[in-house]
Image (cartoon, rainbow, N blue to C red):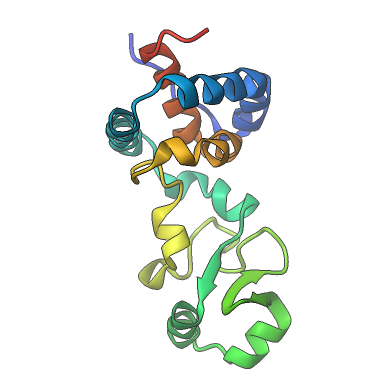
Length: 168
């Protein structure tokens, strides 16, 4: 029987129900997982679930996390969208140590019909989210547990890892 994918409208509730368990699992992994093996598991599951989920149908990260960008990325975005950089910064962005983020959590480049207006020049923070295919996941488990409320792929990865580790 094929698994039914998580509906985005159910994700936060499901993740909150599992939150305590996920924090216990994080502690378990910190004490029992082999770093290299865990990275391989995350990468494998990342690839598996991103084949099943279509980010363009979700965009929950764009709605809940916003984005950050450096000066170079901001320049490319402003050029791509023909924005006055100074006015855009003034109206929409916070600047800290040469990085920019939105003055709220919703990405200003997400259109009303859920399309990304900057898909041709995405900042690294967007391209790489949720970072589950990157190395050193053992040291970022806290953010992974927190991202389970935002990204269905992260939720799925955690649930499958619990099964693989026979955690309960």
